[in-house]
Image (cartoon, rainbow, N blue to C red; front, side):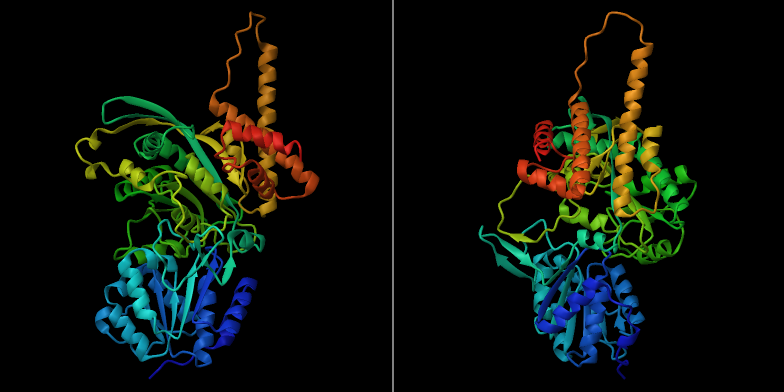
Length: 576
């Protein structure tokens, strides 16, 4: 006997973007519809409401959901059950047919790729509405893409969902429409778009502050040479990768210092409005994850939850952590996209991955708002490419086919080679040895703007930023960051004045020129001051002013900009 049809009256009220997208969908009645919405915006609720409409009006008899991971199968089935749609999360390819006790099933892309004929038969047997969650995963391999296309070509309707509608490769995504622009390049086309900037304006997601930490690193190379470099300083990609690897080594001081800072931030958020706030450390591999969990235990006195992969028991650990008040979870690379842990408010980005797709998915774990005023804070290494991604949180991207390749950051493949666990390395690579690393707060990035001055860990200057209230509106975040920066600069000037007063009247030492890093920090502060002044004159948001300067002068966000680019922007804004 088939389960009863869902009751549309029990659905939660739709947000504005969900309602508009649903009206657009019902009006078009096209076979394929792609909805792009930032993580935390409510794609699951939107998709289930469309599925309920299709079941109730008789357009379809069955629903199939395809998602990236096993854990998400359970999450989808529970969300669907709450609104009266019964989906089987335990369906196996060997079952061949879905049980009549369910409206349909939840599958993974890997599962479909292994037996597309089984799912094509299911799709042909009943008029099926297919939800393809995080559809960009259908391009992960030719097998998956071909399997999804073959299995669901006969579907009555297909709803494509994604929070990151782009990929790092050119594998076409099944059922996605591409349009060729005037430059001859094909770009993916969405039917409904609701970006992070839109959601932040509507108070649907949290503001995210990025606390970037630099610091001196020392390591011994394969050839036995000892090298030293400062994170965030201009250097070759190989040196960036090795300095980054050294910083993330749990045996140095950088990771413990950053974790203490992150835990202090978590404590502040818990004391001011989010008593159950949790933290997530995103690690590169299992060995690092276990080491980071041990560090957190030593720092907090509380064991951290470890999720090493999407293996048996991972779903239970994630669900237990989500429902608890435990402080920290450590995951290899990340807890899968779409995993819903709304209480996550602090993150430590301790992984080598640096593609825009991966970064956006990782940061998406922290933006889910439960009530107005909640903020999120992510700690990350002061690596130029990561700083650029942090500065462009609100950028809208599409999947591009046929674009010329640009070397716009780190090569993830090379970086992963540099950061592999030592037990997986060859004899030559085993000679790499991280010697030391210390952390220093380099800058705070928010809304495309860089705030603050360099501050060693454990100092009052760092504490000023770690102690920002946990409940703030986006406007209050900008105001307080400007205030903190002004106070830092004033304190530094007072200190310099006191030193002049107490100095012995001796022959003056020659003025020591500023280092490149000091010069760049000084220019960033000067630019931020001018942007703030322009904001007060024009009421334009800081982010828009920075974006206009980039349009006029070119170059990356200010967090990545060179000395020459900062000087050009300073000269430009003085003429506006």
